[in-house]
Amino acid sequence: MNGIQKKLFAGGAVVVIAIGYLALTGAKKGWVYYLPVDQYLSQQEYKTQRVKLHGKVAAEGLISNPGALDARFILLGDTGKLSVHYSGIIPDLFKADHEVVVEGKLDGAGVFQADVLLTKCASKYMAGEKTGEKTGEKTGEKSGEKADEHPTTRSGS
Image (tube, rainbow, N blue to C red; front, top):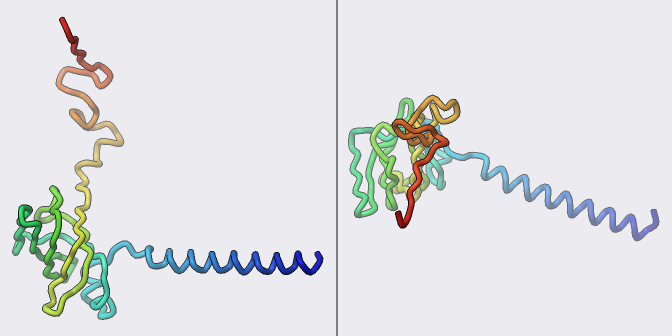
């Protein structure tokens, strides 16, 4: 290799290392999808940060007003609980005893102010779809019809 080739090789190596470093540090921030409520409550470092929390919606204290785009509820962990105020569109599956993920930040009064609310999919929707155990609209069957037989309609008859 002559001098120019060595300089190009060294420059290329620096660029590759820099891109790798940026990709790794950017990916590290996205690796934590959400924290369990108990972990959030036990570690002070998260209290001042914007975080995603996972827990179950308690039946007690649930106030949901979809028309006003507002919900107040208690998010339960295994042992701890946290008051949450959410402002935004309320998902259809948002109910007591359902698992949710909320994103936001703790306010000065100790209430978690969330602006993102995601409901976790209930397991009843996944049970028979892969194995074909369920019938009805999941497999395309209606009473008395096979999944590959669809009634036809004629226009102009």
